Amino acid sequence: MKPKEPSLNKLNFTNEEIFQAIFVVNKHAKTALEPSELYSLKRQAILKLIDKGIAKKVGLHFSNNPRSSKQQSDVLIACGDFFFHIPPLKEDFKLLPHLGILENTHRNPKVSMSLSYAKKILHHFLGIQNVKSESDLKKGFNHRRNTPSQFLRASSFLSNSTFTFPSEPIRKNKGKQEK
Image (cartoon, rainbow, N blue to C red; front, side, top):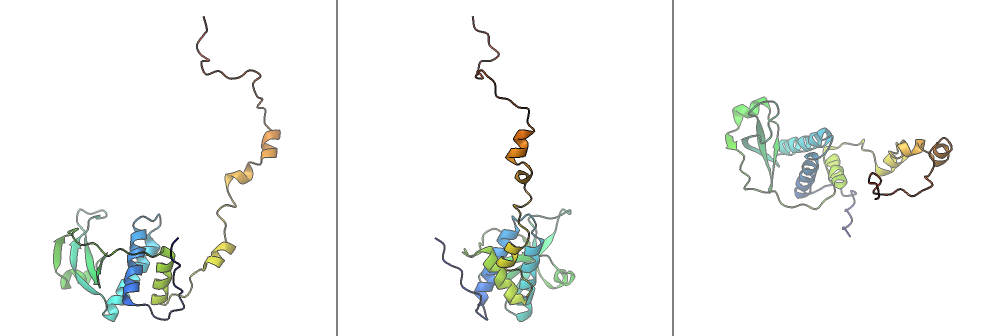
């Protein structure tokens, strides 16, 4: 059984907890169907850490996954033991050294934190108030309400059906004739 997530009654989170939350959000954004919200949350948190002097821009790397161009650079950000990439600003090309191709020799530390808790930490850190709680989500739209099974009720389906069961059992060698 997983350990219970600590409560958010804490007024201040450590820098390490914020770094871990960014890592979890980034990891989930890479596989999410709609990653824009998660990437936005990551970027806002990193920029706030840079403004506070907690994180720093190290340099530029060529992106492993360029969009429509053949080459694209990302800014490497150092946050304690964690390293992240964010899209560059125009002044980053003038101010930061280009580090060339990304080497996969460094791995961020392993983190055990749920995505929902990581998002709550970052929302708290950024001062974002309008976050829907789980109880609000339960009151709202239920994805199970509008399923096709709602429209296929057994009584109406069977009463309108013309299907009848065969009187003889169906045989597997139907196409072969016996001698």
